[in-house]
Image 1: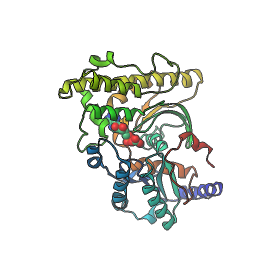
Image 2: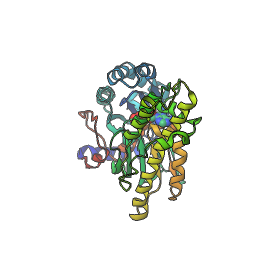
Image 3: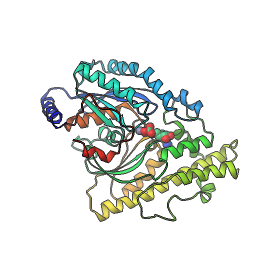
Image 4: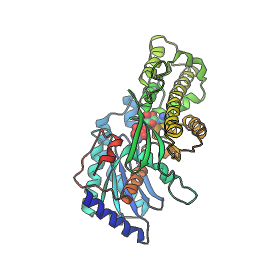
Length: 385
Ligand code: KG4
Ligand code: ZN
């Protein structure tokens, strides 16, 4: 790996004196969206294609991994060729190929990784296996610039990654260098949101990405959170108030009990449903806010870490209420809140291409023999040689 790293550092230096910016193709098949995109080192998105599988999974009540894998097999060749066509490029015009290596659904990851490996090996292009959560964390550096036109936020920054599979609070020190401050003890926040949306029998929004979470956000818009909040437990408030960990399963089960056993919510009454959606959503946010405060007190106030921003990404970060409340919280520590645009918070190929590009520029390329890592702690990236 160190030899590869040196070769790549040399080639990156060569490219930086080259007239045109670097171009990287990103491929994402870790969950249910099949996506590819091409981005450049001067931060242009040349093309992006996403094929969702909403119609296939909604009738099943959630994502079925084996069905999702078949969907990727069907869609990926067309998605990649369309991405190249839209950018007016061929594989030979690319400088590297980046693909999600993990974490993700075990039957889905190999579809993208094998495609990326074969394309890279045949075209003799560098291959970059991307950590899906690092990609969520780095997307903000594609979509935000500082006054000097450089990627922002600069390292180090605090990042909250909230998705269907993860609730992670981290300090991002550099590319591939993350310190975990806290994670969930049970369900990811997106998982709890999805189960609650299903319990409340909310229809996924047609033509809009975000699945059950987007449907819950919409229902909550017309709800009064105060009506049911007194009936919901505040996660980890009785005990463990000073621990930076999250917990959502008790809250999720409490909503299920109130709906299914105590019949507190009439599922045929839209106002009841909206009020419960709003109460659940606000309780989730308040729990997250309380833990971020602990982390900021620890890192900014006590450890005097020179954080430049609070970055929030992952599918749940496309939620407007999460974004506005976390902006206020970050502001109270004199930090800007930086979130990618909502469509780049949910899974997409752009974030994989950008993370691949950042890793490529840092000299971090992989061998064509890499395999998928469905469970892959983000902190372990810094131990890789
Ligand atoms: O990052 P992502 O697209 O896929 C994973 O890597 O998991 O995140 C998907 C999660 C799902 O739980 C989805 O319901 C949630 O993000 N989500 C939302 C919203 N849009 C997507 N949750 C709350 N509000 C939204 N607007
Ligand atoms: Zn994701």
